[in-house]
Amino acid sequence: MPTTRKESLIFGGMMCFGMVLVMTMYNFYLHNAFSSLTLTQGIMDFLLGFAVAFLLDCFLVGPYAKKAALKITGKTAKPLYKVLAISTCMVIGMASLMSVYGLITSSIAEGIRWNSILGDYIRILGMNFIVALPLQMIVMGPLVRFIFGNYVKR
Image (cartoon, rainbow, N blue to C red; front, side, top):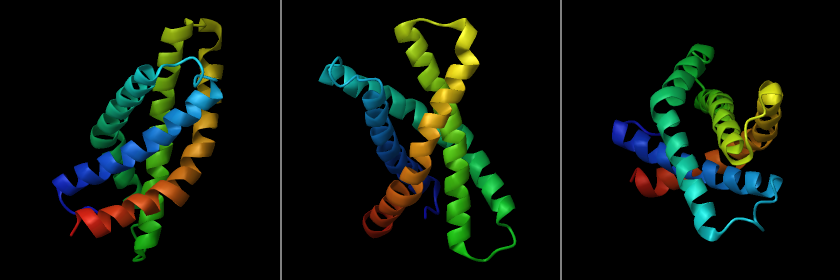
């Protein structure tokens, strides 16, 4: 796990890169966008999503998720519980806010439907959360911690 601000930025960047890459592909699949997007459009969509996610991670969700997770696990000495709590809080915060981002970008592309904004948001959040939580817990979290611990932290 990162111990300095520089390490936190590297770790967060690695985590955001992996999560945004997979979630972007997942959302392209959900919207049948692979056949209609050009490679350049796909890359630009990924880069914009990555920039938004990285800023949210660094300045909003990350600090609050860590505070909340450490309050929840304050009495335990087991690092695994702290890691799982931080990961869960991060997914809740990031999925919630990145779903707003998804709602905004889809509204720009398809037009705003004022009568169904809340319903659309809940649908987007649910569809993102059911993939983001297992992706974080089973794939990206362990993978990024392994890479970070073995190649970056050294």
